[in-house]
Length: 249
Image (cartoon, rainbow, N blue to C red; front, side, top):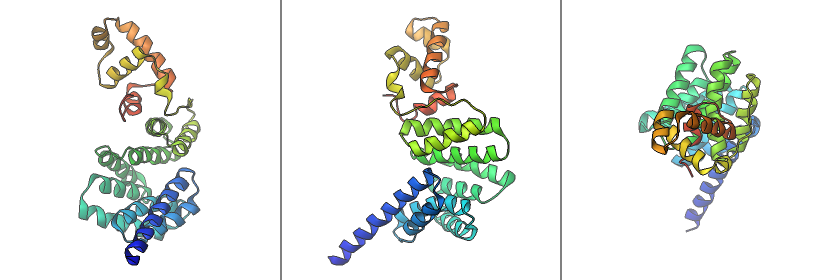
């Protein structure tokens, strides 16, 4: 009984270290993130180890611990090949993107987004858009970077992941974009009609189709959508779909 109790304690400690790694990565405190993620990944319980490894590559790469980052990538690759899950393949592709350059890195980022968009782990998808956007900005591709960073910012804000949302906001500002503060309560500020129009637009209906359903003109729909975009701090229907990805309230 004591052994089982100790194993449970170790598992809790490992998940605690994983949570600390996530927080430190969100705050860009990479030295601390490496310590926490490494501690979590050293506990050879399959879930804790996988999550620890998923948090290790980015901070290790950021502080120049290339061997540590590469080892984590190799371990992730073995697990991804063994399981074949979209989450594992997406995390592996993202890790590979961080440790490569040029066209190879970009292809890996897109592969990661493709895999993770088919999972329900929206936080990892958002973080991949963020890392891809940061990579694009450093490559002086500011317009392309804004697209990825806006998606990341919308997802983080909708989920209440404020440290990552702030990181995405700072990156957007660095591209020269104007950024409006958002939070998880923003959608509750929409009127009933605005929320209804937003949901229909999210589902792919045109202004004319929305107007026909609600018995208003397409110009009135457009006017309401402009107000919705302004309240949510977004500028496109694509971002609207991201903002309401976790379901309209």
